[in-house]
Structure formats: C-alpha cells, structure tokens
Length: 152
View 1 (cartoon, one colour):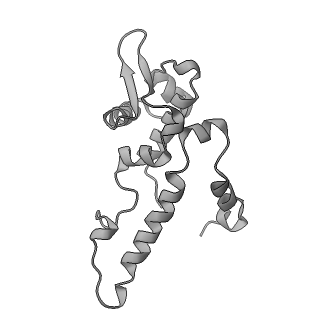
View 2: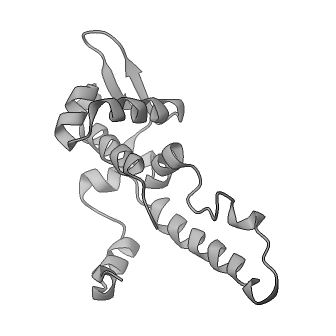
View 3: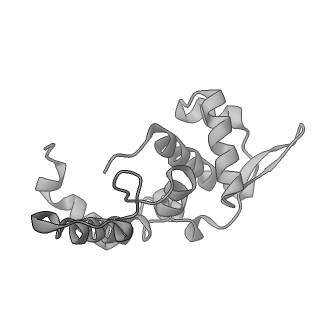
C-alpha cells in the first residue's frame, strides 16, 4: 500500500484535532507547526476534509478547525477516502470493475482480498484509538509479528 503525502498529512492533522482538549478550535497555523506540514498544502487538505464532512471550520479571530464527529466515530479509512478516494484501485479502477482473462483471471480476487484486508484495519482504527494510544488488539497482533517490520 502506498499512502500519499496528502493522506499522511490529513491523518496527522485529524489526529491533532482529535487530541485538542475540550473540543477547542485549532488553527491551520497551529496544525502546520505542530506536525511540520507546509501551510498552503494543509489548507487544501483541510478544505477536502471539510467537504468530506470530517472537520468543521470557523473564520475570524476565534476561528479554527475541529472534528465534525467524535474521534471514536472517524476511522483512518474515512480520512484516506476523503483525500485519495477508494482504498484500493488498479490503474484508477475499482477491483470489482476489472476483468482479467486467461492465466491472469485470479488477479481480480487478489485485489478484492487486498482491499478487504486494508478495510479490516483502516476501518477499525479510529482517531480515538490513536489519540488514546490504545490500538485494537487485532492491529497490535499484526504489528507484533517481527516479520511485519521487515522492509521487502
């Protein structure tokens, strides 16, 4: 899986919003400084998250951004989809819309299974899990496998 810089920045910004105590607003400048995200890039990302119904904003001296729903109701998949679209695509197509012939025919099933595995993790983990530092047991189990940490 390749995660775009845009999606990585969006996740980090959303986590910062989730960590803001008391539902207080956080400015784009604060988010950019805290996470080391280029300001103009972050503004475009926050606009996409707002259009996706994941964050809200208010202008003015008391303005800023905050989550549109509780952190426990926003999955990592929600953020990634708002920024990059569907989780798994092949040549810009959804796997269920692909057709392979001959010996390559089983590839479609592989792409569907890959998407199912990504969903199993990214839809289960919420911003609330990240902020609390308490990942679901299924995610911890996968990450505890030493093979998971090997670059290949």
